[in-house]
Image 1 (cartoon, rainbow, N blue to C red):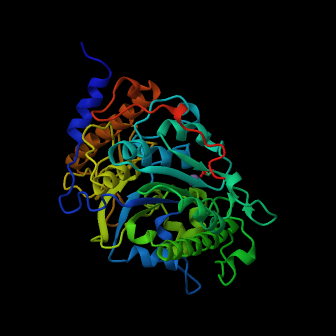
Image 2 (image 1 turned 45 degrees about the horizontal axis):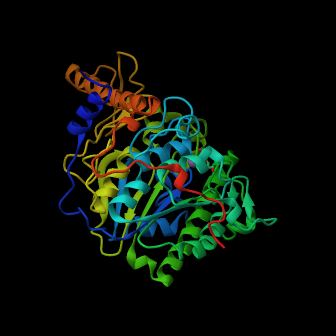
Image 3 (image 1 turned 45 degrees about the vertical axis):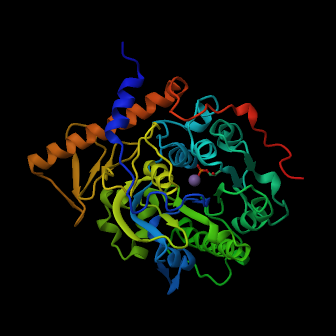
Amino acid sequence: QGTSMDPVLKFVNQNYAAPNPQYAGVGRGKNVIIIHLESFQQFLIDSKVKDQEVTPFLNSLYHDDNTLSFSNFFHEVGQGKTSDAETMLETSLFGLPEGSFFTSLGTNNTFQAAPAILDQQQGYTSAVFHGNIGSFWSRDTVYKNMGYHYFFDQKYYQQTADSNTYWGSKDKLLFSESVKYLEQLQQPFYAKFLTVTNHNPYELSDTDTEGFEKPDTPNTMVNNYFATAHYLDEALREFFDYLKASGLYNNSIVVLYGDHFGLNEGDEKALAPLLNRDPDTWTTFDHLQLQRVPFMIHMPGLKGGIQKQYGGEIDALPTLLHLLGVNTKPYIFMGTDLLSPQHNQNVIFRNHSFVTPKYTVVNSNNDKLTIYQNSNGELLTNPDPLIQKRLQKISQQKVHELELSDMINKTNLLRFYTPAGFKPVNPKNYNYQNQYQ
Ligand code: GP9
Ligand code: MN
């Protein structure tokens, strides 16, 4: 008799993409430092405002020979925003079609997430550093289910008149004040930094962005966005300086990713001129293409370069685990290793729009697909029936993946399936009070 696990296992077996032999295990035993770039979109990379580079440090990292820089990597979040990005990055399962998986189900569900996998397979210690209060998105509960050993939230950082913005500790303070905790973690560690300063409404004092001239579009949100992104870039430079000075740099693999868009569709017309585009010709195609976010993997000695293959947040975890030498075959992951020759390059969004390397398809819920051609942004008013059929099939496959993922999460299915070599996580083993004396 079949169970609801059967279609999941069937999918996972078919979907599995074997590690690329050139990259498998090259990061084995290294510390992993994940840097979550809040609301950071890919268009900021290499962008200029009034002749100033907006993010000079990230640009240098993006072009570094030791960085794998993915230029066609898309966020895939829904209403759960940051928490959806975390769900995908830690579990390679999607956030929910509505609301936040973290707050609605993540507090009770069974997880097979990155911190526990790395602890059990390779003895990693895990920690999250975040300048907001710990209960936001129910992180203080969800992280225990994921098997995070430590969670340093807002109360671990100084709280003074100018230490915070609306979303918590300013990024420069988050990084500099985390150092004393990071230094004490047993190595190898898996440490995640969730930045907050580059978050809507992007308000930051002029002294924090001194020397940077904002653009002067009529849209304040757009103008401010560039200034807070610049501030985040400076915070990262300082953090890397620290990593180098402490020696941690040589022993670490650093993963940077943007969690989701920072500017809404409504702000894009004001943004267009800064991207040398005419706002009057801006379309849904441009909007979807703008959902690219950075995904960079940096490690001294890594054979890097700009990677043009298409992928999304769902693919981050299998990519990382293969670099660390972990066998992902037993796990229920929806994504595939971006570096694998068998990687699936079709990227689905939560609203069922999707992109392939050649086409961008809007909201494929209805029978008739709205298809744009990526090469020139042209709307195919009379698409070749063969192309239509092929995209129809991709749509069905990708929507099926979303549905499988939702079924797993909504029925807490992983409680009935324990991957070979994995021990279920007991959240009672974790306590985030008084972690540092
Ligand atoms: C809050 C921060 C923001 O702690 O992670 O979440 P978002 O609003 O981007 O989902
Ligand atoms: Mn966010």
